[in-house]
Amino acid sequence: MKKSSIVKGVIKKAATPRHAYRAYQRQRSKNRVERSAEDPQLKLIARICPGDFLNYGHFENTELSGADLSVSDILRAQTLNAELLTALVRDGETNILDAGCGMGGITRLLRERGLQPVALSPNA
Image (cartoon, rainbow, N blue to C red; front, top):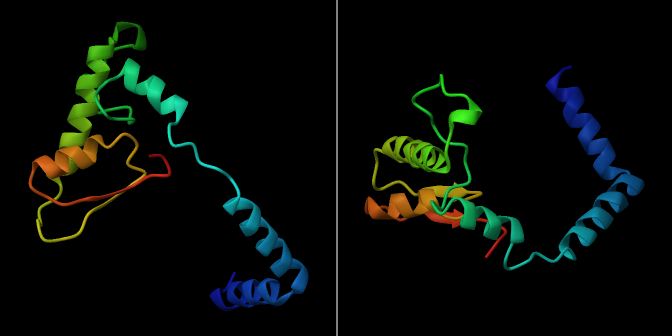
């Protein structure tokens, strides 16, 4: 498909009243969805894995099976993953957006390095 035909298709749908009305209705209903200030799933994960991370982690030993892993192994892997990611930030002057920051573990590590990240999450 050519880029011009894709653009024409998008413009045609946006200009069609039926499509524009459906998009408007979806947007209106989306705004009415209430977001919980305290997500019960995040609270449960925070109690099980108190490391402030939601990622799977970076496991150095890839030979371990799931049965051989402990919660402390997972916590170490999550921390290692976050440390590897934050080590990629070389420029302390650039703004950093932690989109989908979960429980804020990576944001916390960035702040500990003297950076000023902006955390973005739908949860309080």
